[in-house]
Length: 342
Ligand code: NDP
Image 1 (spheres, rainbow, N blue to C red):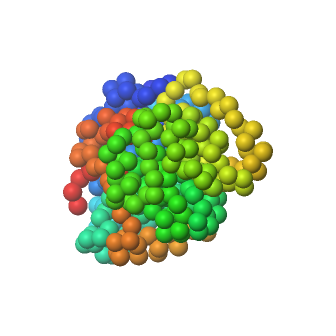
Image 2 (image 1 turned 90 degrees about the vertical axis):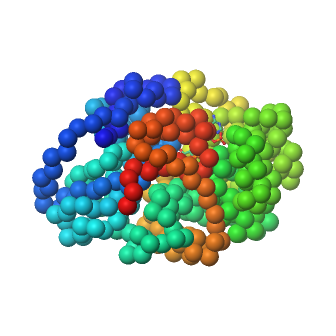
Image 3 (image 1 turned 135 degrees about the vertical axis):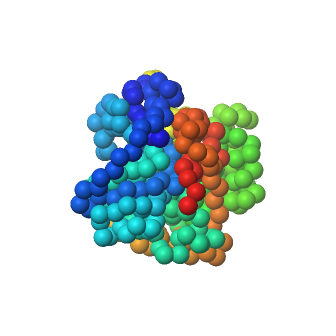
């Protein structure tokens, strides 16, 4: 079974119309350096919505009538590549499907997991696409490089209960910042305040406008805005930024499924407040920060010094709805699909 891309959506993708689960028989005869992976976990990430657009970007769009790819954790069950022996576990670019043949050129996007990955109690396999995978690395590297955080500063994180946001907030707390988060439900706000120990958090759908909420919860202004959502939230953050503030532009999910982009009305603050606003793609930082990231975050997990929530969809069948749900905020924590047991 594979999730196959069928049609470019202009708003939210619709299962059955824009993508669908399809079944076909698997006949595998591997070429040199190819491997056959049995997928165990597959990560559903907002950037995949960008790969459904028929427009040039930093990564090619999904091919029509072909299975979609993304980050996953898999077990190698056949191999003609000595770097990936049968029985090894890998994480990296796999397929949104039960089995993937990974061609030679793509094996460089995989890494073999440590030998103890099968047994680890503190680091479950799904963590390799979450806290120890792309979203974790995104949070870790961009906060350091673009945020330039300093003890005592205030950071505002949007989509704060999600895969990236929950980690940014905790990492910022470790660095001695005051952390303010926004999220789309009271349950998520409770999680931010009571489990992640954010200093303040609000439900951006309640108690007035986003700007009113942000002013209330960050009365001393915002030094770093960790931007995950764009639109009205960005406008509010610009209004509340302190002089020489930094905006880490990670994503703008409120704009991914609309044909009517939100027009930001107060960009002038960037000049007057000397704000640095910088976008990035996590891979930009891999060369310089990946090693430290894996070392630091593994140690934090082993020591229970960082926590995270995952939202696990059991089985590939429900994964299309789970993907759309994630784009709409139904996920609580990192959205993954469990495709098979180890
Ligand atoms: P999340 O786990 O945070 O899931 C997406 C969340 O976005 C939803 O749960 C929802 O939370 C929130 N959301 C959806 N629509 C809106 C809206 N209209 N307004 C406000 N919030 C909304 O996803 P990730 O942590 O994986 O990704 C977060 C952001 O980071 C995305 O923008 C993504 O594109 C970006 N990203 C960028 C990377 C890079 O390299 N630049 C790498 C990884 C992620 P809620 O209930 O709070 O509304």
